Structures are given as C-alpha cells and as structure tokens.
Image (cartoon, rainbow, N blue to C red; front, side):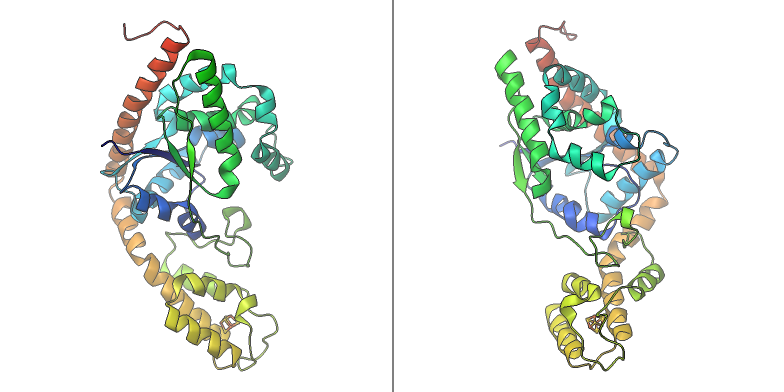
Length: 332
Ligand code: SF4
C-alpha cells in the first residue's frame, strides 16, 4: 500500500540549533519511516523577507542540508530538495494565485504577526503578501495528505485547505485537503531563558564544538537569588535546569534538583555537568556533519536527486491542474 504523503520545509537561515531540532527535525526523522516524506529547503520563502542581501543564501542552504542529514534525515527514506530547483512549484503557485482572494492572505494571522515583528524592514511586497499561497502550493503540489506542524502553524494550513477546496469547487476534484499532523514539539529555552532562537542570539547549534558548548552553557542564567555556591537554589527558575530536563537522565536530574535545593552543588559544577550531557547528545550529529562537510559533492548530489524526484511528482500534479483549467496540456 502506498504510504501517506507528508510535506514540510524550513527556510535557509543558516545553521540549525537545538530549538530547530526539537521543534521539527526530531519528528521528521521519526516520520520518514512511516510516511512518504518531502522536505524542502524553501529558498523562495527566504526571499520574501530577505531579498536585499542574498550573499549568504547558498551557504545557508548547504548548512541546512548538512544539519538535516547529520541529524538523521535519510535520502533513501525521504525526499530532500531545494524549493527553487523544482520550477513546477512556481507555475502551480501562479495558477493558485489566480484563485486566492486577497482577503484570505491579508487576514492570515502569521502574515500580520510577521509584519509587526519585521517592522522597519521593507517587506510590503507582493511576494511577502503571497507567501501563504506559496506555502499552500508547496504542500498541494505533492498532494500531501498531512503536514507535520505545531499549533502555531495551523492557520497557514487552514489556508492551504481553503485554496484546495476552492480549486476543487471551480475546476473539479484535484487536491486533497491536507490535514495537520500535530507533533509534540518541545520549546527549548535559550541561554537567556527566552525561547531558543537565532535572532535572540541565545542558541546552541547542532554544529557547535564541545568548547563552544562549554562556553555558552557557562553563561546561562541560573537562580538569581543564589549568591554563594552553598546557598539553597530553586531549579524551577533556572534556565540551565530547564535544559537539564531535556538532556539529563532522570536519576541524575532528580539528584541535581535535590543538591541545588540543599545548596550541595554550585552552579559552575552543575552547568559543567549539563555541558557534558549536551556534548554527548550532539556528538554523533557533529561527527556525521564533519564527515559530510568533507564531501560537499555528496550533499549536492543528494539535493539534485531529491529535486529530480520532487520534480517528477510535482509535474504530474501541475499537468493535472493545467488540464482542469483548460490550459494547453504540454504532454500531448
Ligand atoms: S545549581 Fe544548577 S539547577 Fe541550581 S540554580 Fe545552579 S545551575 Fe541552576
């Protein structure tokens, strides 16, 4: 029986951090065993907000590909490609743009959010307004039945479902309405206790060296009430402990909390233990990454093969959509 199709992507904004890993990548690695998975490095999406300076774009694409492969996405199990190498997506995007009412795009909550967040940046552009439609195209072009998303992405998915419904209503059944595959995503605190994010400069990257990790963990905010190392502490208000909860084994974790409360461990030693656990966790990913960095042609070949497979699937859907719209079928 054919596996259900899922589609998901990430913008190429550079090296991935632990927040990206636990927010999406960890799940994708599991899902590739059960689903026919398409994963895109969505470079056109990057251009919707970062069109002025594209000098890092190719390096960023490579970094995302390296991190995906190092973290366990397997090109024998899933399709990994760069969005702009699948031109069929752009044509279907154009066709779907014809039937997408402006009001749907303008009311999209993430559009409004981004406008606010990126205030000061000149993004009042046609491409930026249309990006939810491009995102819908990314999904519909493979007739994906499911999209692994967190709660915050549901409004986008709703728009994809509406666009599919509208197309089907006007031209006849073509697209399945994609459903959310709600995945349990851990929101990781960064070095300063806020959500881990590249823009907050509080992230630990999958590719960080042990030395970098030790240094970063050393700067983490702990219980501000603790002045001396034998003062009783409160792990509940400590960012380092929040990371301990993810990377430290249960028995060691309980022991850490007890010692912290009893003033039996200093923050320096406690953070040293955390750094060690983080380094151990990241070691296989880092080793794989190093191996791939030395073979850039292999990574490029994987992306080319992924794009070829994605184009094949996308071309079938595009042809069907063109026929339904009475555009001249190219294959005849
Ligand atoms: S001992 Fe550990 S858990 Fe307690 S405040 Fe210090 S770093 Fe945080």
